[in-house]
Image (tube, rainbow, N blue to C red; front, side, top):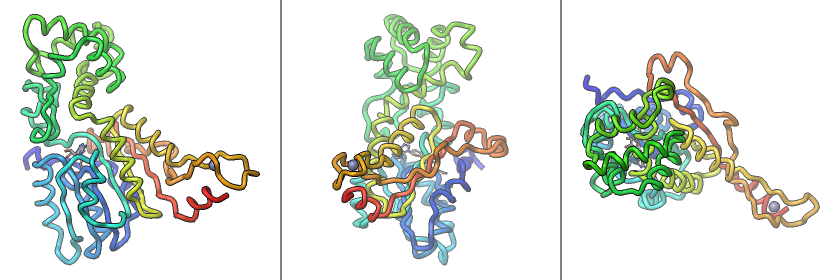
Amino acid sequence: MTSEYRHIPVLLDECMDGLALKAGDVFVDATLGLAGHSAAAAERIGRDGLLIGIDQDDMALHRAEERLRQIPAHNRPEICLLKGNFGQLDELLVQTALPGVNAVLFDLGVSSPQIDNPSRGFSFKEDAPLDMRMDPGQQTITAEEIINTTNEADLARIIRSNSDERWASRIAAFIVKARKAAPITTSAQLVDIIKAAIPAAARRAGGHPAKRTFQALRMEVNQEQQVLRSGLDAAVRWLLPQGRICVISYHSIEDRIVKETFASYADRCTCPPDLPVCACGRCPMLEVKTRKPLLPTAEEVTRNPRARSAKLRIACRLEEPEMNEAWSR
Ligand SMILES: C[S@@+](CC[C@H](N)C(=O)[O-])C[C@H]1O[C@@H](n2cnc3c(N)ncnc32)[C@H](O)[C@@H]1O
Ligand SMILES: [Zn+2]
C-alpha cells in the first residue's frame, strides 16, 4: 500500500453520531479527500440516499471515486462528485437542483497524500519549491510569491493572524533580510530562516519551529479563513430542518471560526419578553450540540497521530416553527 492510501478518517464514530444520517438522506461531504468519512456515511444513507462529495483536488476526487465504486451496488447511494472549493458551496450545490440537504461535513486541512507529496511544498520536513496551492489549476499566487513580494509588516500580520506565531515579526524581518541577498524559493531555505529567527530557548518548545509559519502561508495562499466562513454560512443555509453540520478542525484559528459561526447562528432573540414583536431580528437557525468540541481518544491518537489536534463541533438546524416563534413573539 502506498502512502496515498493511508489516510485514516479522524473522529469517524463521533462524526457518524453527529451527522445522524438515515436511509435516503442527502449527505454533503464538503472535503471528500479519500472518502474515508463518505464511505461510512454511504453505508448509512444506503441506495436511496444521495452522496455529494466536493474537493478542490483532482487527485483526491479520483481516488475517492475509485474507493466509493467499491461499495456493493445493493447498498451504494447515488454519488455526485463535484470539483470545487467549498468557499463556493452555494454555486456547487445549486447545480444539484436540490431544495436542501440533510447533513454536511467539513474535515478541514490537507489530506495525507497532499502532505506526503513533496512537490506540493506543504511540508516543512521536505525540501520542495514553495508552492502550497490546493488547486494549482485555478490559483496563481504561490507561497513563494508571498514570501518574496510582501512587505515586512504585512508578512508579519499574515504569519500572526493565521497561526498565532508569537515570533511573527522577527520571522518577517529575517525573511525580508534573506530575500535581499537572493530570492527564497525552497522550503528548506525558509525553514533555515525561521530557525534563525526564533531564539534557541523558544525553539526547543512547541513542536517544529517552522510548523506555524508554514501553516500560516498555506492559509494565506488558499485564503482559508474567508473560504471557511463562506463555506459554513452556505452549509447552514442549505440544511433542511433537523439537518446536521459537523466540522473537524485541526488548529485554533479554524476552531475559533467554527465556534463563532455556530454561536452567531444560535443567537436567540434578545428582545424584552413584553415586546409583542421581535425587534432585534435575531432568529436562531442552529442548535449547537457541542458546547465544548469533541476530541479524539488517546487510543485514536496512538492509532492515527494526525488526529492529535482534531476538534469536532456539531450543530443541528432548527425546525421552522421555532424560527417563526422568534420572529412573531
Ligand atoms: C483532511 S482531508 C479530508 C479527508 C476525508 N475526510 C477522508 O476521511 O478521507 C481534507 C480534504 O479537503 C480538501 N479541501 C481542503 N480545503 C478545501 C476547500 N476549500 N474546498 C474544497 N476542498 C478542500 C483537500 O483537498 C483534502 O482532500
Ligand atoms: Zn428579538
